[in-house]
Length: 201
Length: 201
Image (tube, rainbow over the protein chains, first blue to last red):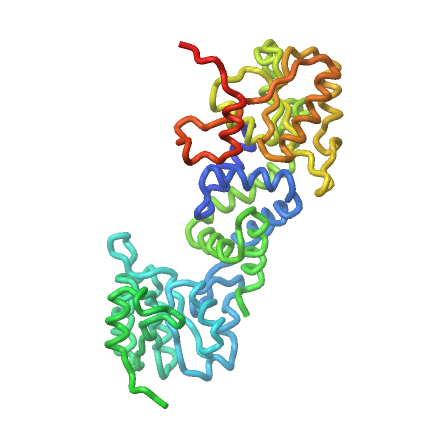
């Protein structure tokens, strides 16, 4: 015997969370039962609400409980004429936190990965094409991850954008600010040489 | 803006789990919404069920949805005449997994900690006294953690047990099996010398 059936089921259910194995699930279950009953009840309720109501923005595919997300709905954002393509909603948050970008986003919810059976239709590229048809953007910024899959996805989307007459850019890759050259991997360093710019005083 | 209000609330609610900060909560929320909707729904349901139904065993105070837990209800366990006092239900599981012990448990759900306002009544020591009054045990085994608070708690309970004429033992402390002497801390090593036994061939 381990625990009572219901406690066992709770510990098993908690393992659906990423990075949570049997030991952490047990610790979480005990913490909820011992000290966090109100918080646990709230979590159960909000989780159900979220799963019932949160879907994808009809335009940019990010998570939202509305039909159109707040960024897509903002008229100020539409003025920029820029569209930034990212892999996940977390990337949108990261870019928003820089305060640098004022345009709109398109969230792929993944990247091309033929081995895992992820093709263009899974990334909503038909939705993107319709959007590029319907609206004329000045610039499409590719901000997919600098991984093999992210690069392949960027190439694929660049093709689509060019077919629609939109100019395409890719975010810069290079040595991170605050990083030390000797600790940076060779691939990044060679990107950083290839992407060098005239030094402005 | 960060996320939509409901997604924000989900991320905040997930932080009630121990060891989960804003970043992991965000990762969990996205994972649930992207890939684990069924599992998430199950979690929400089981969590509510567990919080509604799981309480403490009337006799030993461990978590159970019954009035009396499976171990306390077992007649075979009652025959042993042994009672093992532990700090948490996780300790019960750890001891059960050894298969070494066939008696019953008393779960303190914590340890004496005057600074945090945890006194004897919070550990259900009145429940324990009633149990020792009602039943005559041969042995009470103290298996609280070998920490300052755990030791203090053990001394306190040993007093109670002696007043009820029950003989008291403490689990052995020493060098862990498979451990190397040079890596063991001095305190443990000195315990292991004080607790030495005649070598049996």
